[in-house]
Image (cartoon, rainbow over all chains, first blue to last red; front, side):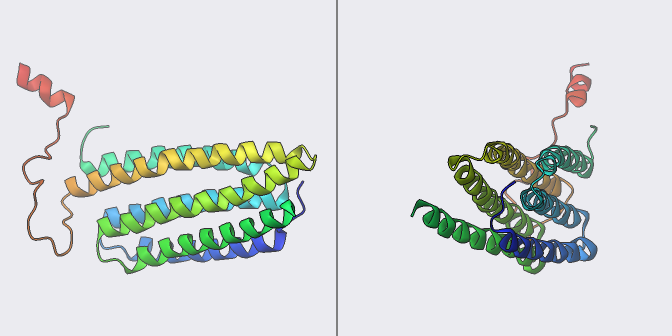
Length: 90
Length: 132
């Protein structure tokens, strides 16, 4: 376990939560369906980075493994939603 | 001496990563269009993630250099997560832009549409119907 920069990384985590909140406004407000999906894609990427930073702060590597799996699953879900918006068969 | 230089580089990386991630949020809120929002929300988060994960990798390698083997574990896992982000994020953005164009969303302020007749879907099932 690495005991360095814990306070700085907590501040970074707070700013990332602020960025997620700003992107959530676009998800709620978006006029069309692709706008909402773009907001969800941005939220997914920021959540992955937040999981990596949280795993570094608490010193447990299992959070970073969860972040890897979350990245691949969110990519698959984004591809399926894009295919659905095109109106084609999957 | 080396440890202090690494600390300064970590501070710079943290500032850059936080700045670009916040820029992604504000760009997503302020831009007028799906395509410009995609531009802000995907590129800025990818660039910010490179710096945030890079600072963690740098700290872990520094810890590994001073003899703590937890640093190797942390550095390799974070590098794999960063590679997963770098591969999946631009691919998803490309698929989303194509889906937005084919579902009929036009850019704000566009005068002509050069892709008008060229972007029809070529699915395998329709090709089979043509052959029959």
